[in-house]
Image (tube, rainbow, N blue to C red; front, top):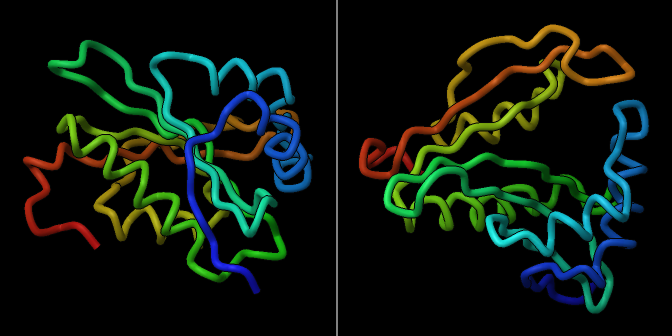
Length: 161
């Protein structure tokens, strides 16, 4: 197996990202190639990919909302190719997103399916906690989501994984 490398995603990576997204989230309106192209090109987003050689095997995206002096962040998406799950790639990708948000000391928000226990445990290990339940959030499946939050790094001293 080739070593996994990480780099920022560009619009040229959108087809591979959309293919993984379709496989992972087919029941919940997966993002299209065009949606990823738009997200990768936006000035307020940061998307990182995990690659084995030239093959994309995971991705994660973070948006910065509000002014740079007092930002909030939102995890837009995170996904790991099924063949690479259970190898720590989700955590490695999350490390990238949390580090980016911590650089500007902003809180992070996200939504996660209430039945996605591995993801919930991962997020909790970073200090995320459940704010609320959003009934029927994911469509068309109708699955519920937890809204979760991680406080600013300056409020989380000592709680990083």
